[in-house]
Length: 506
Ligand code: MLC
Ligand code: AMP
Image 1 (tube, rainbow, N blue to C red):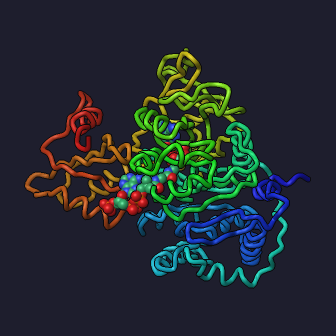
Image 2 (image 1 turned 45 degrees about the vertical axis):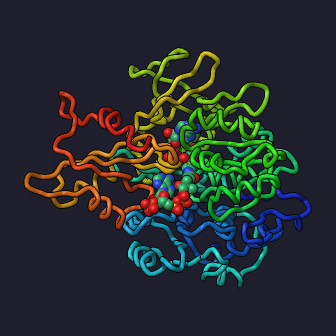
Image 3 (image 1 turned 30 degrees about the horizontal axis):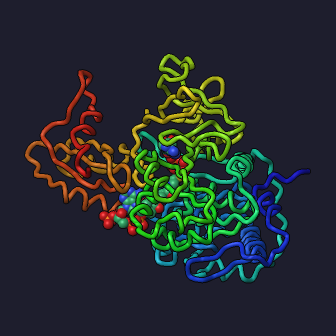
């Protein structure tokens, strides 16, 4: 029987010369393909020795490291379900994810072991390990005693491989369930579509707890047997210094904005580069144009989601890469734009983007009703993005029907932040809106109304939020006002607030 385990497919693409370098880190470490093979086998054997139930979740909140990537691969290899968590999440956020996903294994940084293990044990998790970015921690200590041989566990294409939490418009996060088949089909399509070839080298500068860094970048390099230059953190100077050794780079728009601020970013520095991919948030046309002028390269913008991995892409070859568009639906993906009446719209008209394909997720973890709501009767997933297909067939995203702010490539759901603010003493009501920002693309600004007689101060509200929420969710400014603009139904008109505050960071 064919094994559809994603790890098996990635491993099959390892080069035959297993002693070649697979990953090179910014602190001078080199991992061969054999190291990846053996390291993932040992961690997979450790997981296998724990007697976990079928479909067990392995929740991971650790700093970026090659070992953290190996833990992801080992989880696939052992047939369990990987649940990555942003390192910025604080205790209330982690408590929700662990409570909701009920992982059998939790892996955290040793500095967080105290509070994370408390949450995990309370939720019934029996195995809590530590993993640090200096190759220490109980996970590796235990794995060191395990065999370095392991046969990837048999999986069907429809079996779960990962759960990615993506915040909901009601403020409660939903776990998007992705299967081995979702990810493998997408990785194979992208390998072909983006022209991956022998000798490619990827600069990996993104975090590894979201689709872009964890799946698109890692699967892309591994399924092509390509070396990665692994940066623990995005540092524009370091990226520029590594460009001459690389051929492929992937980033959210903020990374491109910051790279453009580097004098060292020149055509000469990019002489060996073949492809710059951008996505996760809208790429400004100014950035697209400036990049072309400075480097001679045209950024390839693509569009995806946690629920679907990659959906569309500008062409790698054969046609123009058009700034301000996300290109065409990838092979196998069916994409349509629908009007409010549920009817497909002709080219040029703006409506809701809906998609179908082998890459589209299985549903939200333990939320069958929510899952049903997000699919049409004929099986299309409603992305919540609003767009059109232009006269040449390119897809243009013009906005979102979901109330979502994308800041530096991270999603911030206003409902969640508003919920925290509304619970503060003296607050009558609040609204969080996204406004343009030169570095992060968009940032949140909070507008708050005080209860009669209460004295509120924006700075203190922000300070209070900082102690409870991931840093990227914190509004960059908070205004206390006497009223919010409302429509005749009494609903807050966020569009007017966005208009009012749009020049704040200009
Ligand atoms: C950091 N800060 C942010 C922020 N990141 N504020 C708003 N939005 C962000 N994204 C703030 C911190 O709160 C802190 O504020 C200050 O900036 C410095 O923090 P830092 O951690 O040192 O920041 P830095 O390392 O510079 O991080 C910026 C960044 C990072 C752009 C490198 O945000 C990042 O890696 N973004 C990529 C996200 C990503 O991979 N997205 C893919 C999602 S997948 P203070 O006030 O405390 O000093 C997806 C699907 C798809 O969407 O299509 O790909
Ligand atoms: P996430 O929940 O992090 O997976 O975010 C997915 C969302 O990011 C999508 O629904 C889009 O709103 C947005 N997104 C991803 N890529 C692009 C892009 N190239 N242009 C505009 N928005 C994008």
